[in-house]
Each structure stands twice: as C-alpha cells, then as structure tokens.
Length: 240
Length: 240
Image (cartoon, rainbow over all chains, first blue to last red; front, side, top):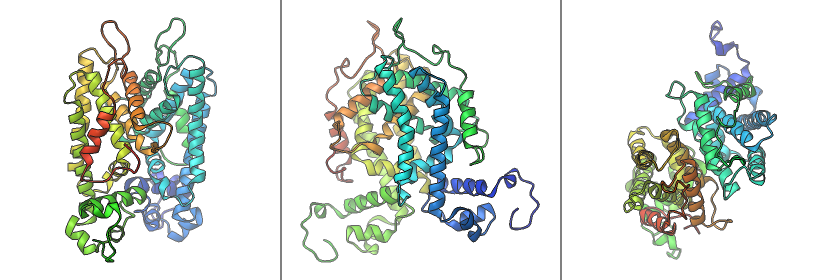
C-alpha cells in the first residue's frame, strides 16, 4: 500500500516492501552514488516513512551491505549452477561468461553499485570475500583448462582479470532494443573469451568456439540469472 | 606557500598550486567520490583557503570538468603520438593497449574518476565527446585491421568495447611492486588483445604477438604517457 492511500494498480505495488526498497535503493545508488543519496529519497521513492524504512532495512549502509551481499551470493550461485553439469573447461568458461554478461545486462544497477561502492563500506571484508569466492570459480576453470592443455594463455591470472573486467563493462553500454539481443552478446563475448585464452581442441588442434563446442543456447544461462535474482530485485525493463 | 607559514620542504610544495589542487582533488574524488568530497577538504589538503581555491579553479564541478577534460585530452594525445609512426594495424593496436594500460596504472585516480563521475556532471556532453574521440582511434585501427585481413574478429564494435573495458580494469588491481612490472603487464595485455581480435600474419598464416611483431619496448609508450600528464597531475608513487 502507498502512503497516500491510492489504490494499488501498478505492478510494482504488488511486490513485497523489501524488494521495492531494494529496487528504489539500486536505482538511486546507481544513478547518483551511495554518498549522494539520502535515506529520505529512498523512503519517498517507495512511499514509506524513514522510520518504516529503518524498520525493514536498518541504516543506509546496512541497506548497501544487504544489496551487495545478496547480489554477490546470487551471482556466484548462478555461475555454480550454470557450470554444474559441464565437465569441460571450455564449456565452463562459456557458461561463466554468459552468466556474467547476462547479470551485467539484466542487473545493470546492481553491477554498477557493486563495482563503484565497495569504497563506501566501513567494513568491506565480507563483501570482498564474496567477490573473491565468485572469482575463484573462474580461477578453477581457467586453471583446469591450462592443466588439461585446452587453454594456451601465457598468464592465467592476468587472463582471469582481463576476462572479468571485459564482462563487467557490459553494464556500461548494453541497452535492450539495440542491434544485438542479449543472447547474441553472451555468445560473441564467449567467442572473444575463448580466443583471448587461446582455447584449442587437441585432435585436430583447432581453435574452439561456442558453435564448435555445440553448447546449448545462451537462453539457458539467461534464465539461470533471471531465477537467481527473482524475489530480490527487479531486472532492467525489457532485458532478458 | 602553505597558509600556516611553514617552511616549504616537501617535494609537493614545489609544485604549482594548480597541480597541487588537481592532485588533492583526484585523491579525494577517487577515494570518496565527487559527491562525498567537500570543497573545504580539497582546500585543506592543499593548504589554501576555499576563496583561494575558487580563484584558481572555480566551483567543485568546474574542477571536475577541468580534470576530466584535461585528462581525456592528454589521454587521446598520448595514444595518437604512440601510433603516429606505425602503419600496421596490429602494431597500432599494441601501442594503444600499452598507452591505455600505462595510463590506468600511472593515472589510477584520474582513470577511476573519469570512469565513475561522468554521472556527476550537469553537462556531460563535452566530456563524453572527448571520450568518444579517444575511442574513435581504436575504431579506426580495428576497422583498418579487419579490412586488411589482419584481424579476424566477428564483431569489431563489440571487440572494441571488450578491449577498452579489459584495459580499464587495470586501474582496479595494478599496484607497483607486484609480481609484474608495468611494461610486462602492458605486453601481456597486448598479447591477449591480439588473441582476442584474432590478429594473423598473412604469409604464412600465423597468430601474431608482441614478440613476432618485433615491437620496440613498452617503456616507449610508458614514457609517452608520463610526458602527456607532466605538469598536470602527479603519477602514482612508484609506478612507471
């Protein structure tokens, strides 16, 4: 219910208050930054009092910690689920690139907030730990690929950093209704990642691609991401 | 002169006031964000009054615009200078990757401020135009490489976005005194970029690398970057 007593007709009014608060905070933190956003602005956007906002989420920093903790936990869960039935490092890499790109595109606000606002946390250790746990999934697949002779990159640690950052960038420029669908961006980023890391078949020795790996459609990973964030925050309108 | 009358003994006190203001603003904007930084904090860090700060640089937003405009202009000049004597698209790409990586590492604060604070500008058009002009240099070299049959990437525009973003990330993690020198990071990123874009020699058809291109040392581009920012702001301590 909105605090001006209007009848609930808009779709977002049907969402639980906690998710409406998360959505409003994400929109404001992504657009203006955490420091420039007042707690009253968030309450006003949701249509509740600041006392009620405090009751649900605690302080503004508690709200930021909640967003980052839940966001990163669900991000890592989605990646784990997407690779869970794939034994081959090249297919695992494609699944992780797709999950990462789909998250940046459908959870653009959350991605920007996590990238920009770790500096705003008084105690960043827990959030940094969650981010490191996510990056460990990449470390494991890349390392397995190098050991198996499937990846030929000179510096696996630097390749991981480069790949993660190139996927992070998708939140900066992807907009629905552009020249490419999200699934197409997922697969072109996967092919560029396989090229960067010099993924090769062994017999015959040939570069591999999403097509040569005979992967299922990227719609699979896009759905995994959509499910991971359901009931926590809303996706970008028109994406996914 | 500092306003507490102390004798000038530290090296930074010998810098012109305008550069000391730029350095202080970069440090605070990068650490706390533009919105969370007060004009008085910048003045205090320099040791001048807020009236004197206003005399030199105008408002806080004027100062941000100055930093972004000068920073991006010098960035593009460095890239143009580094490719100016290179006709071959693969060598041009290596030179641009090196300039970008060296800038992210030696001008880390400026890179973070440009990446994060365009949203803080009332009129972002001029700054966005400068960033676009820089990215056009990449567009031209990549396009020339594809047309010449030297690059074999499926989507040149997406490759440009991926490469720029992977280089942007260097500011997030590079620290002097780590396992790799800046020149080594420049060259490993160049090799990964050549792989991503599938750069090939034509006769025989072989993947190219920094080594096979017989490039001059990355110290050349690192010096180009150092000179580009001289007299504007100070490099990160111990880098370059």
